[in-house]
Amino acid sequence: MKLKLRRRNDVSGPVLLTVATLKGHTDEVRGCGFSPDGQRIVSASSDETLKLWDVSTGAVLATLKGHTGGVNGCAFSPDGQRIVSASSDSTLKVWDAGSGAELLTLTGHGYAVWGCGFSPDGHRIVSAGVDGLKLWDARTGTELAALGDLLGASGCAFSPDGQRIVASLAVGLKVCDASSGAELLTLAGHTHRVNGCAFSPDGQRIVSADGDNTLKVWDAGSGAELLTLTGHDSAVWGCAFSPDGHRIVSASSDNTLKLWDAGTGADLATLTGHYASVNGCAFSPDGSLIVSAGWDRTLKVWDADRIDAQLFMAAASPLLTGTPAKSGGVVIRG
Image (cartoon, rainbow, N blue to C red):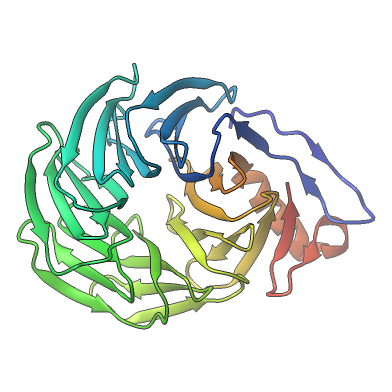
């Protein structure tokens, strides 16, 4: 934990957790993620750029320019040396994560591309767009395959073993074989557009974020619905498991993030501080930090370790540490 977070305790009200706020984008921030070593953050914005940030100082290390439309998603490669981005200009780009130089432009989608990610071995890239899911060679930029009938894909993720891909769709999710593209599972249960999805670190569960204000947790082997997470007041745009698989973080257009117990579905905490929709979220590799991307043109960095400590204290002494959220968790204000 490197960021210096200012905190103030007020025994007459909730603990105020002041978070680091990263400013520099000139339009909404749509995506974010940590580097594998946890020392950098990458962000994607509707201002047509990506930015690289130093986690220890909050300084902008580089601004990546080249897209001609808003940038909707971004991710580091597993070795931290490259970044992939997905844009409304219908392309993806691969960048050098050290210099910020543009390495590749991936063309093949006919419409906006909403999500992207590297395979665990770094050899392939998956992308989710209006016209479906595509698989690419990460070194050459060659399109390898179009996966299944997955029109209207809004998000995608490889399983930790690289053998499966999950895609969030207009209604529902599908799991595909990452080699053949064969559809393995259909996850049905959401009632609106599914905006995001992620595998658990052990690959046994999938979490999805929906426009119906809920998240769901699924058995990644059978496709069975395990949990429905309710508490947000508006559409949920992003979700992620913690590195230990015990927690889920979600980002919503109700201007908040929530922390959930991944085993029980309990609403643990509501994180407030953004002044508009929260579009994306991610845990750091060691689980000590959370980053969020907002419509308010900022990113915020949250101290997940201190949030956990506050939750522990709240269980023992709610009057000193927090205010109950209406769905049962503690409200933590940034």
